[in-house]
Length: 325
Ligand code: UT7
Image (cartoon, rainbow, N blue to C red; front, side, top):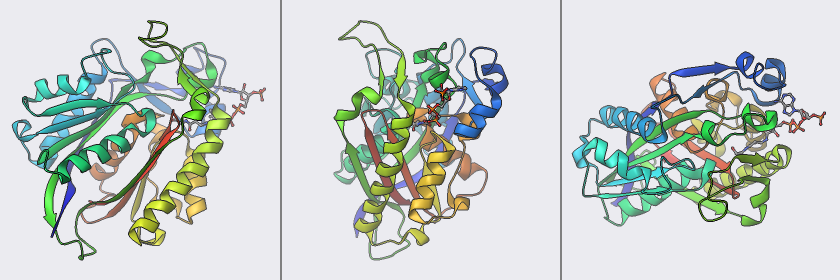
């Protein structure tokens, strides 16, 4: 027997206001056709007054706990991935902890931008395996609308706000059983030399301001396809599992063309790739758990399925994780 972190439930949350491409075209020089053709995005949700990274994270977490049938008081660890915390400090995770009544355990934020959920999942998985906690909430939550340059058409049309969460629980499983649930393997990477391709031009220690997102999209695109294909292959090699055995890929939702290209490189049929970028745009660290929860709730992902999570983002950071859910 060995300890694995098992996904017990998921939840997600979106701001009330949905903004379609036609509305974006009233703000900047763009068109619905350009956005759909280049990205697959048709809609995004934008946080309004009173909606923040913490409020979205709390809503997503409550739904995840409800789906898992677990009480907030039983959560001993909260790892929240975000690049848009409510405050520079304290960690947004502590606000979630307080709201859910799970005080006294461990709570902190992780910053790995769009790969944040993969990093958070891996950190929580490691901590559960070493006995630091029994039950964890892993959250990806963002309000990127607050760091967008709303006059820059090359970036502002691409992002949206939202949150997703999963409840992880340490469980004894028989690893020799191919159907044993839990996270099977994870690989994470970072390469700081590409900082200037995707970054925010401010921060507490430099300008003292929050700053705005800047991206050289074409170059990020090229790196994303290569890095994601490589890391997916690494996880498959680590586990001895074939790409054909994967039931679902839940990728970071940056661009439909990146999803297509990555799936093609691995020989995965597009029907196995969960796509929500059309509805939610790129929600950074929230995008993977938001897409996962969407597919669980619409009945595509079922208990027992083999699911590959993957993401790539600013830093660059990237990673993939394989789990039987
Ligand atoms: O989440 C982190 C990871 N991020 C990503 O993975 C994003 C990766 N990159 C991308 O998704 C794509 O590169 C973009 C969607 C950002 C851009 O698509 P592209 O096919 O690489 O377009 P491009 O940047 O080469 O721009 C093509 C043209 C340019 O005009 P010229 O120079 O050819 O005249 C742009 O100025 O499209 C123009 N353009 C726009 N036109 C209408 C750029 N943005 C817009 C826009 N509306 N919103």
